[in-house]
Image (cartoon, rainbow, N blue to C red; front, side, top):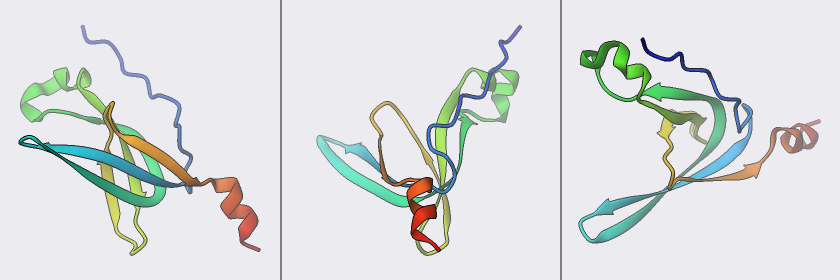
Length: 98
């Protein structure tokens, strides 16, 4: 029997502006990439395909759904080396708008 997966408490509430910095290894080089956006949601996304069936419950990866400045939605998969920097919190942005 497979264990049930509980949803973790969200670290970044919707509306929080964040910068996600990740590094990609290409050969012997290490490239830095980043994305800046507003958090739309936070979830655990399954890793693996349909062929895994119910075993896909074991392989879950945290992910942030971000709305970019141009309105595009993107999902950023997070790993242990990802850096998420909070640029603006929800409370600060609510105070700034009248």
